[in-house]
Image 1 (cartoon, rainbow, N blue to C red):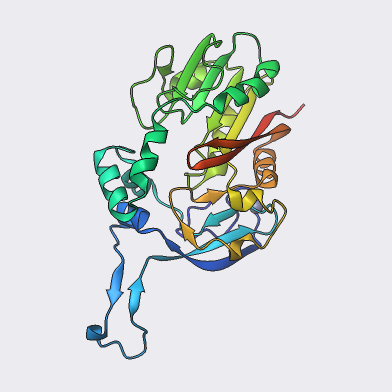
Image 2: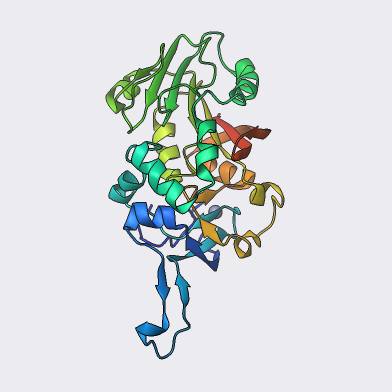
Length: 288
Ligand SMILES: [Zn+2]
């Protein structure tokens, strides 16, 4: 898809009917990505036609009229993504985040262990894959939150972060991915961060065979969950942080279909953990 700075088409289904409403980019993200800081427009500036007050980085909230996905209009470049996610949740990240968002300090502790909701995801996936599945976790970081970790015969993680993986998990290159057959490809809690989620799906679809199950999991944000069919959500989303895409069930389904896959099931998990209140996942396979 096109790599315009400001999205001109839907990031999921490619639709062109996009509704929009003004919003702000949260200062933490604006600082990490653009090195922009909030600024006070004071009377000393002598602006003749402007009101005084605090100015934040402006953006638009966009909602696709075809599939309902709601997203930040700005699409970050590779180098901007690298700036945002360098040493993710490391010391410098935490210092800056607490500076702009003092409440973050007490929430940070929630991110250290394996998410308990993964057990629920395991229960959905278990009947769909062989007893000892070969698993690829796309964007799976250390692998600590990879579903079915204990019963898998093989767990590969493909992730740009290059962090050390947990026991039983191997970080692999794309060459290895292309040479390996997987029963399950998981991409969980990744696509809400990425500028071009459809491109990710298309890449994953290309390494699936007829028996591979794909599981795409994303946060089911409260705004989407409370009004799943609404096309008016864009009017209610006034700020953007690291989650630059808010998915609906319909948008996930249309995105996998656009990649030539067949959605086979949706998973909904409530009361996930910490900041994450809900999770939604689509399971898909190659068309029969
Ligand atoms: Zn769409």
